[in-house]
Image (cartoon, rainbow, N blue to C red; front, side):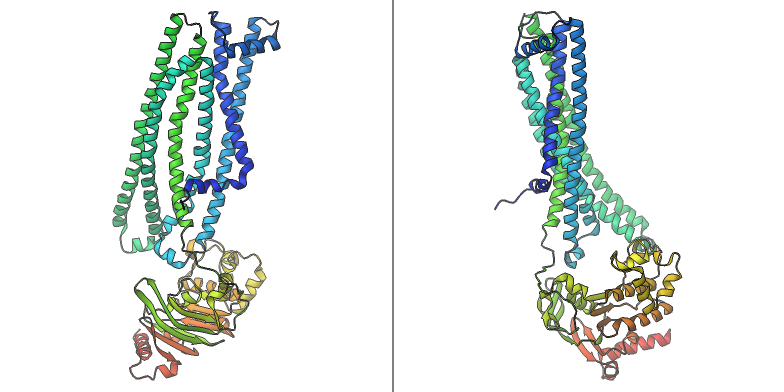
Length: 605
């Protein structure tokens, strides 16, 4: 089956807007007609009222004569000339009106289409597996969602419809020229293939050039986004000069890509102007010869009108090349956007069971998983968690602790084995309902640049402020929030930089509490925080874990000594399990060594 082109895919989004599409086509046709009338009226004015030369009549002259005799019989030539000038003014006014509606509707349609594509792209991205975001730079995805979309909009506002309008204008102008004087038109047509060939070569070169430009734009966006986000690290390790040199290198590549684009434009447009000027010169030369040799079918008025017609004929060809640039950029952008939209990185959500509430029995049976093929992270994990139980998972960095909770939430898909909740495979639950019953408090809490209230509710307007305040009081953080300027309306800025890591953790705990999940997961939620925040978090943890299944991942073992069950992991396997009091008594036990090392370190400090 032949793969559909990106251009056709973009056009498919125009189907819901057939009314606007029809209006754009109507105004394009009307614009072509009125534009072609202006030179004709000038021709008639010159030949009938300014020059008394005898010439053979043709269909246009006859039609004009009948028109003037029928509507303005009895008027003298001066009055008829004035009437003709008024008609020319009306035609010009109609051309302006047609141009306005055509450009406005074409741009409006383009923005509507891009709005639909952008919404679909964002929805698509929000359902991707975490693995996709692990491999794709954020800056590149931002480029797809923003600047690439604007380039797609230009397909309609500055590309496709403008080209259609220009082609219509060229066809109608050629018809007028053939009717007015076919011999002079023949001269024009003999030269036209030259500019058409030049335009075709130019378009092919520009497609390659624009592809390079889009690649470099994505690279530039990725670099800037990452360095701005990690500016603290850049300055902390004195990498300003190094990063500046890297930026200069990427910026130079971007500059060279654009210079290639500029070079092709600089070559083509002068060539197009020269061809147009040569054509005009030949028309004037041969037209003058025809007149001097007594050809009554050729007149001065025709030569003047052909001067305008050549411009109207060749300028669209010249502009079509420029608009093909825009088209090429839009199509290249569409290629990239549809590449993301057609990616099979979405999480498979074939579940049919709505998870209303979990008792909380979780069972992992022979679960194997690898982020990269051939590099197994979990190596046949078997784990059973009973409803209402609080378990802790400990181990060295990279042991696979966080991977387990990522799999329970289906952020990633397991390679083999099964994970069940209350005896049902998690793949059988709808993804949304599964995640609604599981709340996670991460070590690195992400906050949006907005108020504390909106960061707590995550813009769920069904949650009232009274409910938020009541929940905050229950987990003991209401006073902390009220101590901030504007309390719940305090703007935390981008990524919550106005709050400490401990304060951000407290906001995350309140989020989780409001969700009232069946299963709670705390991933390193008490690491890297001050003593006061830790006390508040311990209080919040006690409230949150009450009467629900809870999984706590922790490096600080002192925070999980009261867990119902402690799972000890090493290199993707469970090496020990039991209560704290039992594990510390195991001779040469992995947990015992971890606990002793931390205990001794705390005494030293």
